[in-house]
Length: 335
Figure: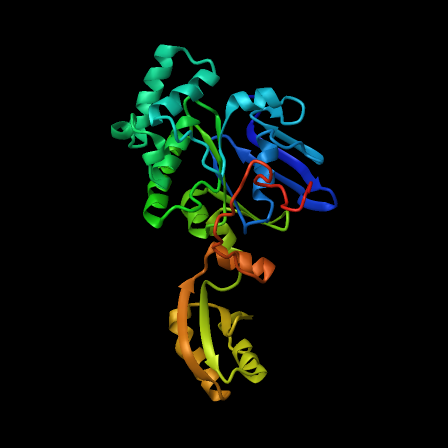
């Protein structure tokens, strides 16, 4: 890989007509790093990954991947990367081994070497016993593992994963996480992940960029991002008879940093939430409110997102993608 960075992006922009999907984003990814883009559906994550993998030409700015400019040397970029898109792309009418073999042929890998790599990768992802079964018989988690193994046949230096566990059940998701962790051991491959699952980003990524409305709003390690917002706990209260006076009384407490409203609840950023919860409850009752429920949790990446945007990332269902309206292209565009 040429250069000192696996990915170097400077003010990259992508517009669809008058709509701006990615707005002057800049960041760098070190070689061997597991880097994540976290944000809600529609934030621009897929559009960004399509530009970095040469499927979309940037409207403005510059991106260098594996030492090559994505606009000027797209064929060189493609030689050095592997891409796992949101939509499943393995052929259902072929076996797992046949899917792997065809992919290796696309990259001109010789038969003996191709066979060795395919067998090793199938074993690594736990599909050796199902290698000769049609992919149509695989579960969603098995198909995703196959597709990750498939893009490793040509030994890419960078692996791009666009919402790799979307639509999977929790058990299958964790199996994929374990696989991805194994891939990064030794730092021999760089992984760029997009996700709207907070736990996924926090579990896997060394650094995370949080994106909303096409712009990066925060970036750093999960620990750094959480340390950058006041308070170490979030207390959520459902209060009967909620009034402005109750909110003001909470804001005056010395251990409280921020108070926000979320649906019919009060969301409080506080120090030592479990220890200070009784004092918070007393303040609400003294102001005429009734506690309907209370919960305390440590700061998470979703809390970081709420801190910067005032809204939460909702666990949305995957949208159906067809060949006319693909990931990253607004549904009204071109119609």
